[in-house]
Amino acid sequence: MNPSSRRTDGAVTSVDTPVFAAREPSPVKGWLAILAVTLGIFALMTSALLPVGLLTPIGSALDVSEGTAGLMVTVPGLVAAVSAPVVTVATGRIDRRIVLAVLIGLVGAANLASAFATSFAIVLTARFLIGISVGGFWSLAGGIALRLVPERHVPRATAVIFGGVETASVLGVPIGTLIGDLSNWRAAFAAVGILGLVSLACMVFLMPKVPAEQTINFVDLPKVLKSNAGVRAGMAITFLVITGHFVAYTFVRPILQDDGVGDNMISALLLTFGVAGICGNFIAGALITKRLRQTVTAISLVLTGAVVLLAVVDNTTFAAAAILILWGLGYGAVPVTLQTWILKAAPNTSEAASSLYVSMFNLSIALGALFGGLAVDGIATTSVLWIGAALTSSPCLW
Image (cartoon, rainbow, N blue to C red; front, side):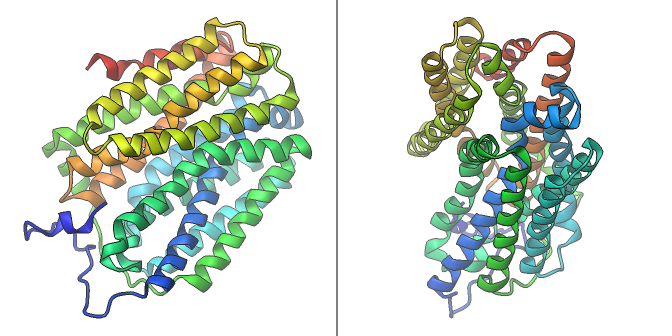
């Protein structure tokens, strides 16, 4: 997000845009603060998606079905969809460092509670708290670079922060799954909980005070949707692509196990997915400046092709790895591409539009996991692949 694009026309609609004083923030201190925020958002999003790789062992340990275990992804997604605008507006006059520190501390505590949970109800309560943190932290962190580093560093710093979201999405799950496979699922939750507390310490000691400024009001949100066709299109694409992805991806572990892939290979395959996702992120980053719409179409085609292949191919470990590489390339390109779509569609109302985007992204994660769980329990495990393909292919028809 380039701050200069929000001031060249002289009509800044968001009072959160800072007025750069003669004395700019220190680059070194600012970048340390950026890294603290990035670590926090990595811990946050890893926590949100961690159950994807651990559904089977958690379900077995707590005596719930895999479909029911999928609620561990659904609950925080639904809560985050609501908390994104609510936390942004409600904390508009509180120091941003305090708000972010409280939210990431809550993540650490909730994951540690999950690690010691004796029932599925306790886990879901902890996941509810994580959802509050996910929505609020992500919404506030998206624009925090404007307040931390010199103006010339803002675009790069913003990319680093959003890289925390991306890296968590494509690496957090496989690393957490690996910890769970080497030890147990409780150890994976405990590790993410400790990471959250480390992030809290970094935020307290490395971030400067960030005086609060009112960002948006609730009335701004429907105005953005009503008046901006580009934002509406971005919301629709986000819903279709993210819901379709998570309908299938939430249950990728039982799908691979049903195909005969060994438990000891699941974490390695998910790690392969993650590495491919990082590559997809950089590929998309090189394309979206001049070919944004074409990149969205390509993402839709790649995701659809990957889930269809997983449904129809007799998946040996090698074949599964090849398909997950393709899938990872497609999904890795999603966050940066859709975030860019939203910012280009609403350069003068970026806070309100970004808040809506975060809400839709997390709502889609929740709905994908929910619909997938219903399909797994009511139809068949592989049915989620066909449902996911139907959704991800829809943007290709526009």
